[in-house]
Length: 253
Length: 340
Ligand SMILES: Nc1ncnc2c1ncn2[C@@H]1O[C@H](COP(=O)(O)OP(=O)(O)OP(=O)(O)O)[C@@H](O)[C@H]1O
Ligand SMILES: [Mg+2]
Image (cartoon, rainbow over all chains, first blue to last red; front, side):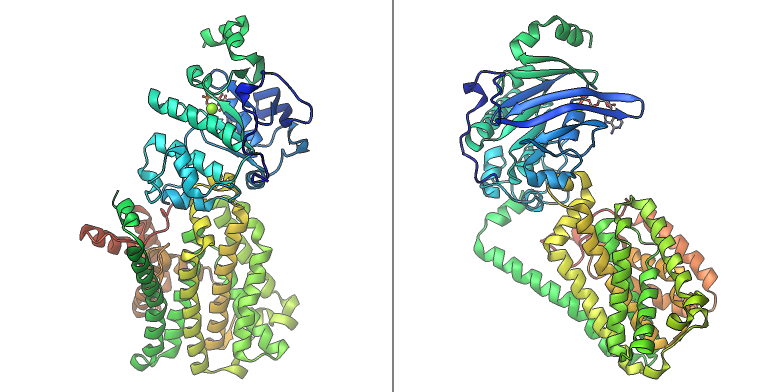
């Protein structure tokens, strides 16, 4: 599926934000509610992401960003509502099935297999990318480290490995959870370039959860703001920063 | 990064590594097999030798399921009993010869394993308890007077028609070889890699596209097969047995302790563990099994607290200290030994 994709789908930058070509919607999150006991972690959340687009997802701690990713990637089943990929209902499928359907993710705290080498970490994954493992390692900036044990990598390299492992499965939709946290300025710039290349050269659609707005704005200007499990803003990043509700939520944090 | 340097040092080093690995694999299979084949020239007590081989195979079976999935099968004896009774049914009702019956005992255990696949969805402690319950259930089904026409119920199974101490001995040697091949092959296979990944992080593995239950099922059925073959050849060698003898929970316990003591996740650890501890048991424990179970209980606690990698970890530690840290040795733990 991945190999059949045009290598250079239009990037987010070349397209006005908010443009929703019908039939172009890759991901639809439709009225998803997720309860953890009494806690309403997600409350009727609806999102649409067009193919080839990058959507930022921001919000204060505990607002439900990771839960959104967990639901889309199949780790959690929504209490109600559904997730569709290319119009096909995918919520309720196990993560390994979703990985084969082209949805993959990284983890807020990277989760490599520590006792395996970097290349073994990639070998575990189902392979559907048209890039070879070595090319993917090169792309994420881990070239030359293939035989190192994952547990010996720095936190920043573990994030790159998480990303590489997801890329091996040839995702159409990649969910990125706080890739920027804890990285230096130069590492952030480098990762922003990598994410842009995923979109421009591999045609991957991205949902980017991010606290660091300076990093996010290097990748997209389209953003959805989550607060206490509900969407309070959807639109252009610069407008979000001027929106009174959004300001209140972030200042009140 | 010494490993990076080694990887970059060219084709010759790599092929030398491959040959070294193959030699280790071959030796891991041949050494125990040949030693057991020669053992009868040293010790003429064939029943004892078969018992040790049976425990070597059981310990390897535990190694496969626990070492590669982290699941502790307290009900492991269920497969052993299924193998013993599978062999009995094959001889008594299907007219099979003893070797065929042994193979069918393995098949019977695999079928039980297939029925129990849903247990692999459980988390560690629940799995341990559920597998124990399943073994007890199977035992009470087999020993029920209502199935006397099939299993002879509580009155015991009689295989004296096919008794052959030499035949069961040599078959046990072959099964030991099979167990060694299984573990070596699993370690080198893609399934082995997937299981190591699942064991390290089930969520990551699943997101990487690994069907976690399917991967565990592979290890589960392989370990069922080994226990079934062990149970069948044991039944053949003792030829008359009661349900309580082949569904005795002590058998699970012994197999687990032997495997842990030697070192799960290694190829030779469980063999050494089974041979050493079974000899100790045979020397002092047979007359006073209760007392011996106490000792084994203490051994489990000590291993869990102080030596999670078993004897193999000691050996590996010594090798590390000697600075001989090279490649994949014969003894390398797959992972930690925590129960998950
Ligand atoms: N598996 C779970 N069980 C119970 N509660 C959970 C679970 N996962 C998340 N929560 C709760 O749901 C809410 C949303 O959590 P989530 O991790 O999605 O927030 P987040 O926006 O990603 O926060 P952060 O910025 O800190 O990563 C929090 O109150 C959290 O405690
Ligand atoms: Mg989060």
